[in-house]
Image 1 (tube, rainbow, N blue to C red):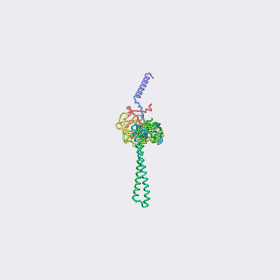
Image 2 (image 1 turned 45 degrees about the vertical axis):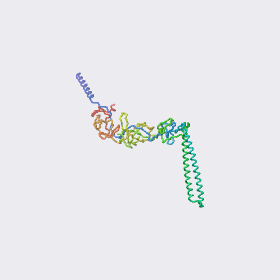
Image 3 (image 1 turned 90 degrees about the vertical axis):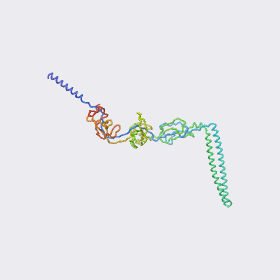
Image 4 (image 1 turned 60 degrees about the horizontal axis):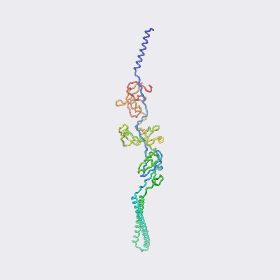
Amino acid sequence: MTSKRRRILVWAGAGLAVATLIVLTSRPRPLPVDIAPVARGPLVVTLDEEGQTRVRDRFLVSAPVAGRVLRIELEPGDPVLAAESVLATFLPAAPMPLDPRRRAEAEAGVEAAEAAVGQAEALREQAAAELAHARTTVDRMDRLAADGVVAADRLDAARLAVGTRQEALEAAEFAARDARGRLAGARAQLLRLDPRRIAGTAGGPDAIPIHSPVDGVVLRRLRESEAVVRAGEPLLEVGDLRELEIVSDYLSTDAVRMRAGQRVLVDRWGGEGSLSGWVTRVEPSGFTKISALGVEEQRVNVVMELEDPVEARGALGDGYRVETRVVIWESGDEVKVPVGALFRRGEGWSVFVALEGVAAERSVEIGERNREEAQVLGGLEPDEEVVLYPGDSVGDGVPVTSAAGAS
């Protein structure tokens, strides 16, 4: 082979290599994308919101009368038994000391009351003596009337006198009782402030123990130290942690889709898995709440009951934060597509289907959906693959490849 022919072959090979390189570099490269299959299976649609646990029946224990409550030793979380556990010990307020003028008036009132008692007792004795005399007279006249010595009208008059004296004695006894009561009231005005009552103890004669109204635990201790309190001042809150419920405030537009008996899933409660329950009440009255963004929202409280046993709830207590999901629609067998594959095209929904390495835009009909999946009513079949989160670079006919495979 001549040198000239050899040079021609070398240049021809180099040209062919350059042409091949140009073709390869000008050919569009597949775009790496996330791809997910269209599946068939169960689909659950929920309305989600944060909620808070609360004891269904909580009892606020207050001071029964004005006085002094001794130091409360119970701590929040301590167990209590109904009608047995003493929550607090209460001492009624001691009487106020009297100034000299009021004391003199009170002493004079006692003397007058004592005199009234003496007068009433004397009148009662007089009425008793007159009744005894009238009865003796009637007995004597009964014997004489049997012999025909006494007229019948005189006997009737004697018997009438007995009835009159009996009523007079009863009136005198009531008057004596009233006088003794007035005397006791007058003497009560003279009660002094006894230092021994100020230093009273839980076992003293004036101590009033306040017992727990229910089996449960102490939820809150509103007062700890010994102090003088007014009537009705709150002291403790008690309740039964076994009777927990959840309250969540939902948007009113979501609350209208809820009803009593709907299934509830409770997540992020601090333990493993989800707790289950149901809606017990959707309150009929809403309220205005300012969101974190400063927007006024109409909210409605939805109350839910926990279904799981107490042992499965762990240490879930009163006022704990949870996340509630109210199931408003569910199906056990639906064609579903990831929500991340959907995008708007006009008034409808579309997806990019990965067909033999090429993205093909397709319109789909969507039904119910949740945060992750949507029900497919038409346009897709199970086992087809769709592009997740398609960006501006993805279009109809663009070569695509799985990002997981490309990596």
